[in-house]
Image (cartoon, rainbow, N blue to C red; front, side, top):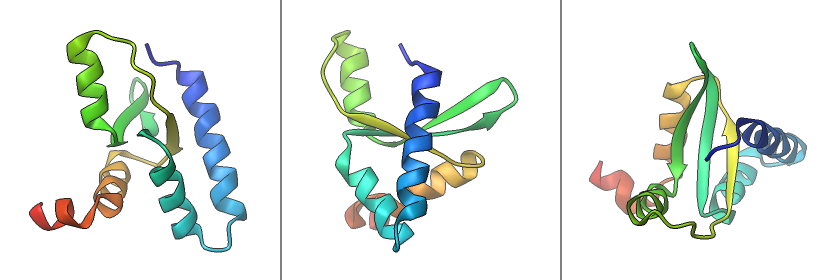
Length: 100
């Protein structure tokens, strides 16, 4: 079960980390690389929208096995779904970007 308040707090922590970094793009890449699952959160008509930036395979495996596997996770606030999709594309391994 997702805790939206926790996701908002995680996204706020990420925002502070990126804001104080000299190289913001590198800081964002470091955050994404450091976690198993990264969710983009954004405002939507019915509250908060979610998009998986990294870790879809892990989440699918957990959902299909109905287990409670341990994984690290964080959230990144973006303005909308389009920005979430672009973030996912730009931070995907090169092999995945070429295949797309």
